[in-house]
Image (tube, rainbow, N blue to C red; front, side, top):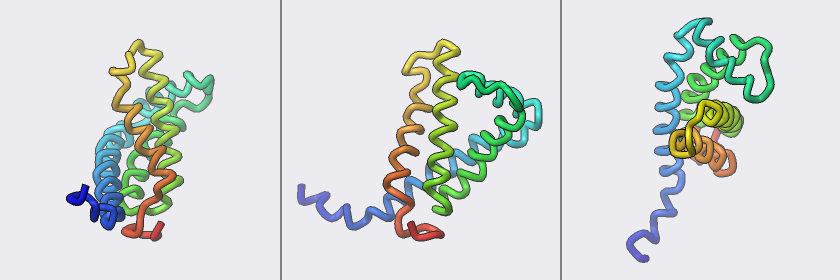
Length: 135
């Protein structure tokens, strides 16, 4: 369609909008986890049990929170972008497993599934030209 034929010229702007939108939301989502302290980290880290990892739950919970907060900031900046996306995919796989283990349906886990797919796709797309490390 002629109306949309020129939009591919703005691919990097589209990636910037996606990076900033998702990155800010990940930062906001992770901040309460990070500031929740060791009790919150242990609670989060126990979810690694779905992968049969039971040791050091506070460390795993802390890493989950740091991945969301620092990863969200790095996503906005486009810094170490593909690594951040890989860590986010791992975070959301654990979230999906936790939701399914808790009895959620696919619809109940849809947000985690959607974000896992977004970050997985972004691994291949990269951050675009409008990033700190220029893709």
